[in-house]
Length: 350
Image (tube, rainbow, N blue to C red):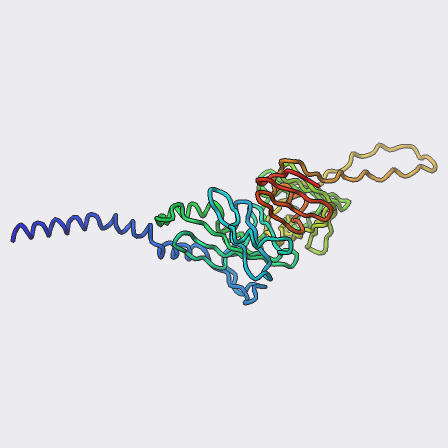
């Protein structure tokens, strides 16, 4: 009897010693715990039944990897994107849906959207995404993040780290229609903060190093990486529209306290200085019938070079009118040209 009591006490002690570890393992590998964590981390957005507008806005999220494709909400089915090995690609079913007639948009890193649903499955987590309107078209799609091992449920912490590589919640003070970022130390003073309207022509910089130069003559140059694009801009109240000469693509910004904010992507452009001015011309004695100077030469047209990335091309030329995928190649169709990408880089331009 005493021996039985000793065995029972030993078993109970071992259970007590092992129970914290067992509890932690259950917590780390439990689908319900992961679903609860994700529901707490992401406030979901509710859309209308026809998906044309937002009823209740949740958190804004930022995409950190290239390759995400979304279809117009008018399309009957959304595309499924798969994040694996640090890259976003499309599953076989989605590749079958993509054709020239599908209204779609490829999103570039650091663009923003909304989350309308998160579902934990036995082998992955599916995140439903929904965009702001681009040229009056909203887009939707699904981002699937598979588990590393199909036969084992991952720990919550490790999965959240993987998820943060491709998608994170934008801080609350930068969601919705945020105010433009404050100038960094050493930038030009903003006269709007001193009660005087700040001039729109000038030099602006965005997070990541992209630059925008607005000249007093109504022209602009946008620099992203090694590429650049030119065009004309127009101001209507506090609205600023950039129209690229080569593609006709328009980018809409808001003028906020002398800085700029992209209406669609919420990217902030901070004013760093005035636009450069031409050197003053020395005074000359009056001369009769002086012919007017010739008009300034046109800015060189933007170019595409073999080896450029999809981000560099779309930054300069805007989004293509349509995209076709043929095996390992993707073809971007613009108004007057066709750009072929192989493994994400330009391989041919026609």
